[in-house]
Amino acid sequence: MKPRRRRRWARLAKRVASHVILIGACAFALFPIYFIVVTSLSTLPIAGITAHVLVPSPSTITTASYGTVLYHLSPNFLTLLTNSLIFSGSSAAIGLALAAFTGFALSKFNFPGRRTFVYFILLISLFPGVLLVIPFYFMFSSLGLIDTYLGLIIPYSAGAVVFSGILVKNYMDSIPDDIEEAALVDGLSRTQAFFRVLIPLCYPVLGLAAFLAFIGPYTDFALAHVFITSNNLWTLALGIYNINSTDQGAQNYGLVTAFAVVMSLPIVVFYMVFQRYIIGGLTLGAVRG
Image (cartoon, rainbow, N blue to C red; front, side, top):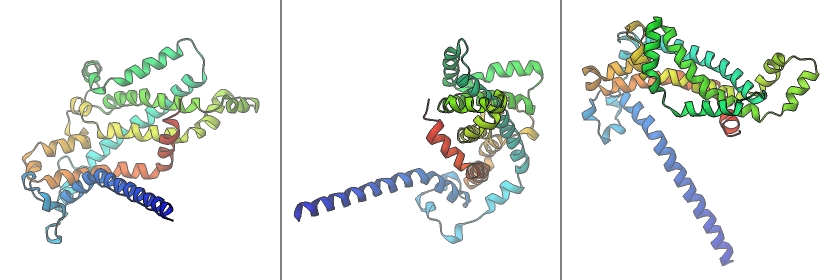
């Protein structure tokens, strides 16, 4: 009985230890979110944020910062949100469409230099996008695209194609060629087989690619800060930077965090809507090759 009891206690101890570690990891990961939400309900300056603020009393909670963010900013929050959605939505749509064709060509077509081209794309993806700011600026300045929607959508879309094209290619590699060949035998053209057979099978990785292609432009600051000069074209990233760099933001940290909370809501909605495809892409397409 004693050895059996010892094994039982050992299993119980391992289970308790694993739960304690998981709870600690979750608390560590969720603490920044909790901190941002709590401070967004406070009007204390940065220097006044201490440990007791993390457990606020009901009398110190206020939503004044959210009212300021939504109704009293210049340019107003709706303009910033609209610009960000135009940039990120257009870039994600264009980049995803081009990435689908790129992944299909790299996966299902055997042409000279294909492997070299894949390695070249992978090499490009290793360099940070901020390195392209100067050449993009000189090129678009000569084309008159500075301070325009198109001037940001083009580089954002190009960046989405580089990364998403490899994701789609790896996922399509896991789809047997027999499926496409069966569609061709049934009378479909290669284009019809692509749209009616392969694309539905690639929904998981396309959902993941769309999510990543949307987040990049939505949260980007470097390119937007250089390419956008008019206030009416500012994005949310430029808006929160403007608040944080002023005395108003320095004196009221709750205003900055309230802006961050509201800014994150479209990303949360996007993730909730396409959650099934995003998780499917992370667990399948992103690890196969």
